[in-house]
Length: 385
Ligand SMILES: C[S@@+](CC[C@H](N)C(=O)[O-])C[C@H]1O[C@@H](n2cnc3c(N)ncnc32)[C@H](O)[C@@H]1O
Image (tube, rainbow, N blue to C red; front, side, top):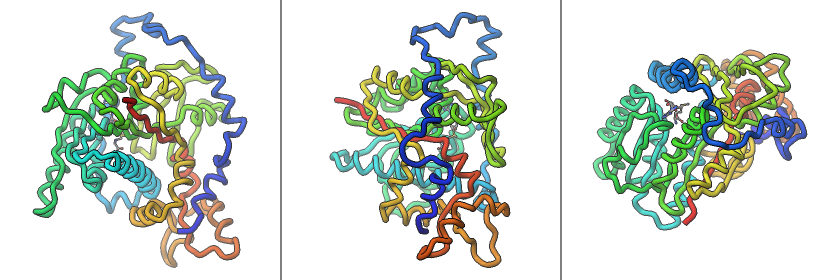
């Protein structure tokens, strides 16, 4: 892997200072007052039914099939998924280092919106002591628990695997602290990966999710996560001549544009048939403001492209990247195939390769995958003592 990946950000105009076009939607995001209940004028059962998407989200994730490695490697977004997974690994690894470096020996973690347990191995590698996994999709929680039990069964006799509890609950409505086996349990980390945006449907839901994330954090503990960047979504929507944008791997569709309420600003996200659910814009300054209620201070907020640019400089992260196949080799081996036959998808990598002295292959993502993953941002909050 060379520097091919850096080119992607450049090719998409996403590196460096925020371009003027990116700042514009910030002003357009409607700053309503944060009065409780202002979005609740019509509380008729019909309206409530229409506006509560929890069931739809749970059903969607419950019916998602787990596919094996062979099928996954055939996916058009194989490398992008690996890239996202690498990014989570780096984030989780660095936070664990901080927590352990500060003297915490028995690290406890809350995985909020754990899904099918995609991060279990990261927690195992990090040597934590206790994990609580919670998700609205009960089938996913069951699969997560089965995965954990398999992992424990297959572990070496001298390896101590963390204890775990699994909770099926709507974390934007139910209080997790009331469901803990150990009611006194406090967490060092709450990890909320690709989840928080589902709660921005209403202030009540966003606040409950935040409460679950933060109220049982130890002083100095971290709330970390990944979520779509509302500015980026609105920027792309405003640049589109319709109500949607995307490419062959993802599509984002809004119902209207020009005005963006603070809560309940819904869009549909479709990712290669993997995710097709209603999501909500998370206006970050508001998220940050709300987090202060729980004594949380924002430590880091970075677009994926920025996070990547910074982390890829470290050898350990680069070698993990290779191990996780987080970037696609370009050009591919003789007789092999790129993720797509469309050569325009690799112009940025080709340009980079054409430079004198660049060793081939370079690591990259096809343009469409980069356009999809570069929607997201990483956040880290820390509980003040
Ligand atoms: C994109 S998946 C991410 C899963 C996992 N965190 C990962 O990174 O692999 C989003 C997850 O959020 C969960 N989720 C959405 N709304 C939720 C809610 N209100 N309470 C708990 N989990 C929720 C979904 O069921 C789904 O498992």
